[in-house]
Image (tube, rainbow, N blue to C red; front, side, top):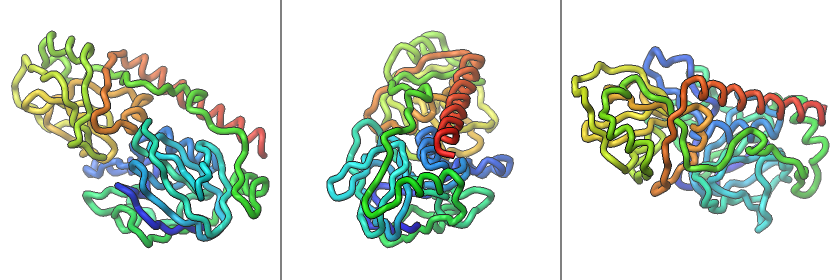
Length: 330
């Protein structure tokens, strides 16, 4: 399996589920902005969770399938199309060699994840395939994909990969009727982001906190994989003492010196000195990963126990889907 990038689009990088083992050395996690969609693409193929994939930002990218390949895509950033034939998301698709695939705009979101059977065969850096652009590590030479890049597939296919290939391979594009449903995984398209109070939550006055949960915030164009600037009400602190730099992670919401909110995302630093007013519940981070500039969101406060229950339920649903696919095809 092999593909060649014809047009990389706005920003396309190779990612996996992140570089988690080096946080104590100040190495960011990176990984997908929308981890649920990335997992769905690998899950639909029967890949392992560790298999690397491509994250496309918006549409306008094109690539050629050089050799017959089994692929899957998920996410709301784009639709995949081949010679005006729309390729359905969230399921395995067999594509004969020599065909060019284009990404068409999908207004619902910003990011799309492309996986191929077995994952892409690239070197691991610090136990991860994720591209971290500021340090130029991981992925393809630590950079965004460029026109002419050739990505080879890994030959170590799973039993489920082989089962899908056996059923779908042929002279034409082929895919099954079933798909991995986000709804079945407990995911709903919404602009309400559930958050828990952060360690410095009580450092802000009650009026600011009330406003935070009753007013829309708008994603600024000054946003990237490190973090989103959110336009909205200014937060006022009652405790203005300086903070030591402390741990942050994807989903941490910090408040800058002028009272604006910053939502940290996949490439965020490991520590920061701004007060942490809230933390996005893990189950809603995929919603954040699909946001676009000018999108409006509302915050809803929940308890840590509620956030943990939602996370456990999501993971259980993923396990059920995986078990169902294994039972049906193995």
